Length: 86
Image 1 (cartoon, rainbow, N blue to C red):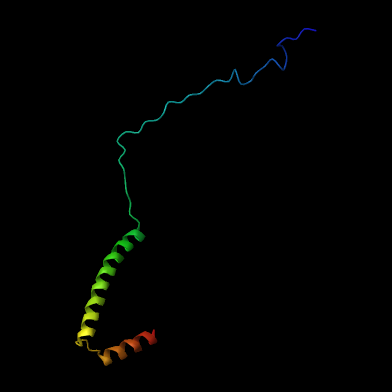
Image 2 (cartoon, rainbow, N blue to C red; image 1 turned 90 degrees about the horizontal axis):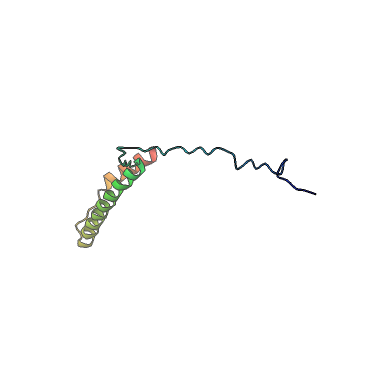
């Protein structure tokens, strides 16, 4: 019996496929771009807020310890009423 490469077994479909090689597209004059989200902007302002707040708290602590801090009862009552009326 003679075996030849004629027939179904002799055809290799992968050998005869054309290879399509596309050249790479080159982009010119592409500059980097950065965008800062609104959340990031809010966080950066909150850092300034926290340092300002810390300074205010420190000043209040010093006033309380020295006895110079006075509470305005009328202002406290007014703010409480405004808070609960909302």
